[in-house]
Image (cartoon, rainbow, N blue to C red; front, top):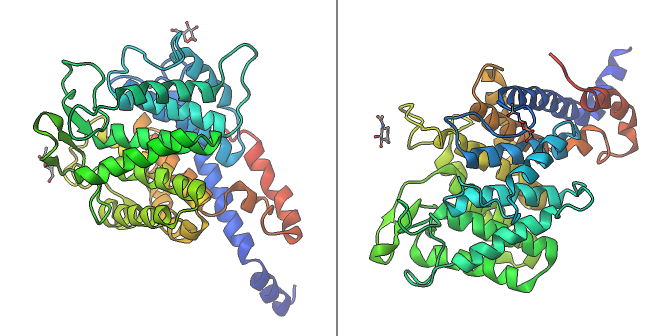
Length: 386
Ligand SMILES: *[C@@H]1O[C@H](CO)[C@@H](O)[C@H](O)[C@H]1NC(C)=O
Ligand SMILES: *[C@@H]1O[C@H](CO)[C@@H](O)[C@H](O)[C@H]1NC(C)=O
C-alpha cells in the first residue's frame, strides 16, 4: 500500500481502533464471566460460596444477566434465570431465610427486573420477572416506616434484628431505584410518586447532602438526627442510576442535574489513580466480605447511566476506560468471586459507555463498518475458551 493510502486509511478508521478496543473488552468480559462460573459451588445455581452472602449471589446473578445483554453472549442466561426461580420462594418475592434486610431482598428483585427489562423469555406457566420485582416493591412499600423520621425504609425487616432501628441509604436507594425502574417499565404514576417520595426523604434527612454525597444511614430511635457519615460507593451508585432513569421517565431537568451531581460525587469520592476505590477500607486492606463488592455495583450503574443519559456518556466513558484498563492489567482467573464481580461489572460498563456491542459491530457507525462487523462477530458469538 502506498504511504498516502495508508495514512488515509488511518484517518478514516479511528472508529475501527475504537471498535477493536470494545472487542478486546468483550473478550476480557467473557473470560471473567467464565471465571465466575467456575467458582460457583453448584454449577446449576448462581449462589456464591461462603463466606460471601446471599445478597452477593443476587448481584452476581444480575452481573451474569448484564454480561449477556452487554456482549450478546447468552451462555449464562438460563443459569441466571433458573436461579431466580430457585430463589424466589412460593410467594415469588425472594423472601428466603437470608433475606433479613430490605436490601438483601431488593438485590434479587433488581436482578429479576433486569431480566424483565431485557425481555428474557418466561417459561410457560411461570411467573413473569416483572411480577417478581413488583411483588418485592409492593411488600417494601408496606414497610415504609412513618413512625419515625418522617418516613424511610428500615435496614432490617424484622423487629429485634440488629439494624432494625437503622434507616440505611442502601435500603432506601434500592427501593428508590426499584420504584424508578418499575415506573419506567410500567408507566405507573403511583410507582413514580414513590420514587419521588423516597428520594425526597433522603434529602430531608441529610443522607444525601447538597454536594450529592450519600452517607450510610441514620438511627431512627433518635429520630435520625445523627448521621453515620461513612460513604460507600454502592450507595451513590444506587441513586445515580435511579436518578438517571427518573430523568428519562419524567423529562424533568432536575433529575439530569441530580444524576450529574451523583456522577461528580462518585468521581470525587471513589476514584483514585484512574481506578475505582473504596476509601474507607481499601487503603489499609480492611474491606470485609461485603465491602469488596461495592465498587462493582457502582461500576454497573455508571455503565447503565451512560446508556440512558447520552449527555453523561462521554464523561462516564472516559472514567470507565481508565477503570477497565486498570482491571485488565491486574485481573487474573485465580481471584475470588467478588473480585471477579467487580472486574466484570467494570469491563461491561466500559463497553456500554463506549456504545456497546452495536458500536463494535458497526451498527451505529453505518455501512462503512460492515466488513468489521463480520470480522468482529466471531469472537463474541463464539464461546471464548481458555
Ligand atoms: C444443584 O442445584 C440443582 C438445582 O437446584 C439441584 O437440583 C442439585 O441437587 C444441586 N446439586 C447439589 C450437589 O447440591
Ligand atoms: C482502616 O482505615 C479506616 C479508615 O481510615 C479505619 O476506620 C479502620 O479502622 C482501618 N482499619 C484497620 C484494620 O486498620
